Length: 298
Ligand code: NAD
Image (cartoon, rainbow, N blue to C red; front, top):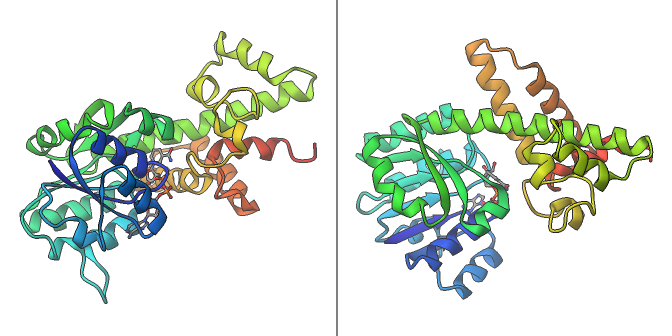
């Protein structure tokens, strides 16, 4: 298929690469030229603009940081029109970014007004999952759009879920990431307590993995440097899932809770921890660097 892929960051670049490897004809665009050049070397076409990338595309996929970027890309801003007004043909629109359900619905409605099918399809699985093509896609949108998207998503992911109408994918993703934020900060807290009491972090990790404290953050994303080969912690917290993005997702969970009068005390605590950690200059590090917050004063 002819696919336009917009946003080639930590996640978008490996996802687009898997589409190329699967034999799709992929045109890519990112504000960062170097990101496009790497994909060009792998066989994608580097486009001159987002609009250029979508020329002749049957599917448009975006993987951008936050809601404001997605709204701007598709709907434009006061001084510039968005992609929806520039598209030739009627490609399927798939936004894989994590944004608020309300933003997804707003963009979805703007798409529908132009006769376009829009899916919110946030992902889980991290950079490792994006590279391996084993992401989980959590899709919101029509059944027909979901069926049309499935073969494309299968080139990038292993588990493809249909959560409901537009916005439902984001609701599920936000619940998941609120839990992940809680689990990562809890894991970092437990490791720091054990180490302060003389335990080796690798030994403690192994014990907790085989005990009732085992969880995804501990088992596959250990936040203590040197415990797990290949983890973000073992490469100075470079790359991965940025603290800024986790703080954003926990903010989305908070907004979602406000809107329906839900109580999220653990999620609020996690949001404050990650926001504080970001404010201390760690926003560009992987979110497992929350471990540093618990090691202050060492
Ligand atoms: P990133 O910051 O690494 O990449 C975002 C990319 O978008 C950058 O390359 C940036 O230059 C580009 N960009 C921004 N505005 C643009 C525009 N108008 N046109 C073209 N390109 C533009 O972020 P990421 O880690 O790849 O995450 C992307 C999304 O996926 C976020 O919503 C994040 O919350 C979500 N997510 C990330 C992970 C992870 O582990 N990193 C996991 C699941 C979900």
